[in-house]
Image 1 (tube, rainbow, N blue to C red):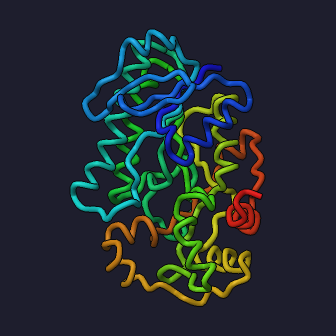
Image 2 (image 1 turned 90 degrees about the horizontal axis):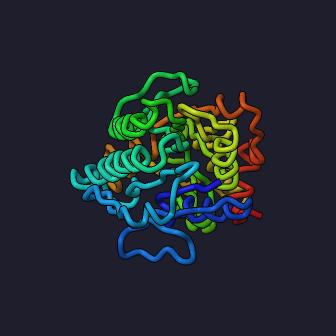
Image 3 (image 1 turned 30 degrees about the horizontal axis):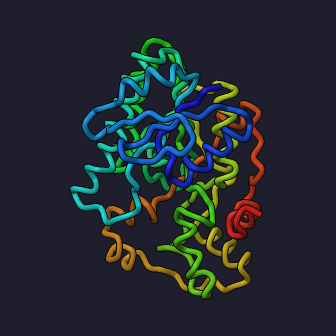
Length: 304
């Protein structure tokens, strides 16, 4: 199929381009006006000002599906009011523009829109499925507005999926890559009390899940997390054990509040989210890394 992709320069985007092309799909990338597209067909756009190159759209033709990963990083910088606004607007504006493009040029295409388990907020011990109620907090609000922007594509019955993705584990990027140097020095350990639930997925299983969603046309919210959530303390122990290092250095919540700011620390690091992938599992999808040990082993050793 012909699949358009936004956010193709990020870790997940680059990997997804490779996965799609490896199975014979044609990939069209949406890029900023001055960004290189390489050998692939490209559409130049600038969501900040609501602009898309109409000549590019006519040249590449219609899409069978669009995967929208566009959005500013949520953990790159401390959450000032300016950064919070950028996190929200970069997602909502890009999605709204993409929905407009699909309405005018590829009506009926399957829109697979990124979202996150932040949609549920921090929920303690509660087991969270796709039918669970929305949560509260900044990230929950971002995800809810993000999904509402994508839902405009579904008004006329066009297939629309919301990828509620958990923590993506990979040695080359994301939160694990930031933590690994400390763990390798024997300075890793639980964050805060360590009791909070984490819902993660390996990059490999995330890519497989997206392809599965395309092929089986799963629509609506889909949790993309391993079927086995873990507590932060157990995750820390698993990383340390895989590296054959101790994991005794607990980082207190107060230190995280000082380093990241209270809101960012509470929602990104200390939030408790016990999320399970009910829709994927019920559809027959089988995770390659369905246990904490398997996920950490794959991620720590660079996908080997």
